[in-house]
Image (cartoon, rainbow, N blue to C red):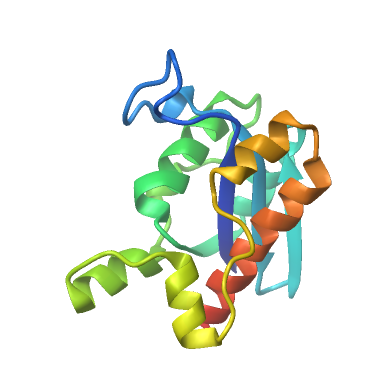
Amino acid sequence: MDTLVFDIETKNFFTDPGVGWNNFEALEISAVGVYSYAQDNYFCFDEFELDKAAELFGTSSLLVGFSINRYDIPVLDAHFKRLAAPPSASLWDSPRFDLLEEIEMAIGHRVSLDKLSRANLGIGKDRHSAEAITLYKNGEIEELKKYCLEDVRLTKELYD
């Protein structure tokens, strides 16, 4: 079994027409970035490789991320359920460690991944999360993957 640190990017916002708040199934995934401790490797799957991502998630014993319980898990789980061969269990059934929830419990409020990284690692994010949608719309898929994996790397370093 494997511990996976991950982050997802979507093609749209909750505020886009036809989506609506907390309509996770209406959010479309553009990229899934993952670090596997067992393989000591980073992976990034685009929208056409969700089956490969689901296969990797099927090996997990712990899922780690930043705000995964509020965003990444509900969106990814909805997409995995639509696959021809979804993982045998819901991602909600997997043990999870959400860095943002742990921080909120400790200090009583939310803090951004950028601020947390700058304070603890001395480096921050190069882009804002809203830019991921623009990268996708502009066809800059390699830049989108790079951005997604940067969030995974920062989250992994904070978790470590």
